Length: 184
Image (tube, rainbow, N blue to C red; front, side, top):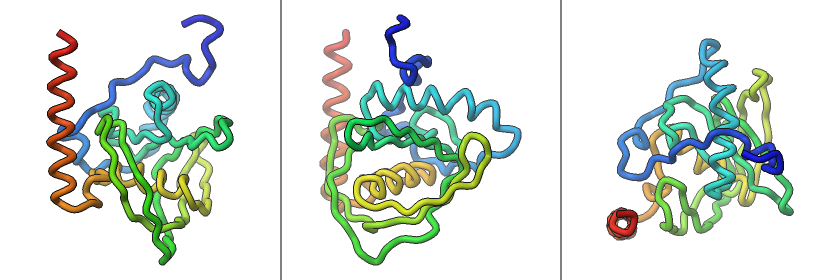
């Protein structure tokens, strides 16, 4: 890559798994002390992959790693504010709910309205092993819940009706077949 490439994109990109890949449905294991080197190598590549896609969140199972790791950046006011979340957990949610349209890099081009708690309290470790905690609402709360769902093998389509989910998954399969034909 040239020297003009922004620092956050100067990492080898990772392939993003697409539904129905089985890894997307597996529960991830906690990151332990022996995983430190893997996580330090994986996190910047996940951020670069997320930014290039483009997306605002990416969980490790979406790139084939079954570790409890995700990256998020909602880029408020177009300012990059990347977060690397190791072993994240939601420790509290609001009773108030909010519905927002969601999409997913593992279900390209597919979107649906999903209702989730409007606010969450999150705990995680950063790359230095420091314990962190935050309250989030709005788009960030939705994004965090979406990415943490991935760590438990849950997709946003699991939060919608079976009819809507089946329609969306059929459309994805049709789109993917069309893309494969066009690539030949």
